[in-house]
Image 1 (spheres, rainbow, N blue to C red):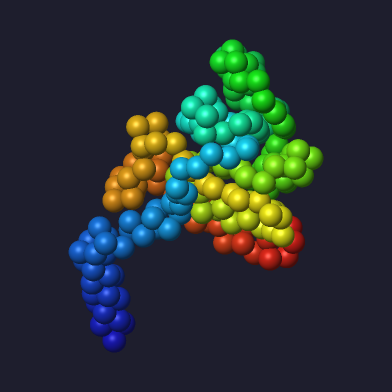
Image 2: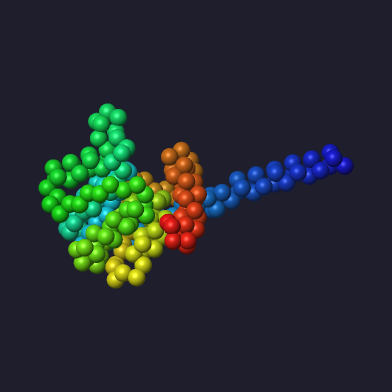
Length: 205
C-alpha cells in the first residue's frame, strides 16, 4: 500500500512537471505582464524619479530636456553610498542634473516608495501643481501605481506612469524567467505587492 502511494505521488509530480513544461510559455508571461503599466505620453508639471537605478533617472532627465516635464524631483536614500565614489546614487544624480542645466530641480532623501509618494504630494500641494509623471522600472510599476494613487487619493491630480524605453531597461515578458536579474525582480515584486496592498488597506503603506 505504501509503495502504491509513493508511485501515485511520483506520478502526480511527473504529470504536473510535464504540464508546466507544456504551458509555461503561456502562463509565466502573465506574472510580468501584470506588473507592467505604461501611460500614454503627456506633458506634466512634475517628473518624479527614484534614483535606485540609473535608467530611471536618465529617462526622467530626458523628459525634462525634451519639454515633456517642467520640474524634476529626484528621490533616494542618501545613507547608501557607492563604495568607489563615496557618494549616494541620489547625490550623483543631482550632480549630473545640475551639469545638464536642469534649473527646476528638487532633491529629497527618501527610504521607501510610500515615502517617495508622500514627498511628491507635499511638493505638489506646496506648488499648486496638478499633473505628475512617475518614472520607475517596468516590473516595479504596478506597485508604484498602487502606492502613489493611495497617497494622492482625493487630490485633483493627474498621475501618469512611465518606465524607461526597452533599450535602457529591457522588458521581456516572454523571457523574464531566463534572466537572473529579471527573475529576482519579478519574484520580489510579487512578494512586495500583496504586502503593500495589506499595509495600505490598514493605512500604513
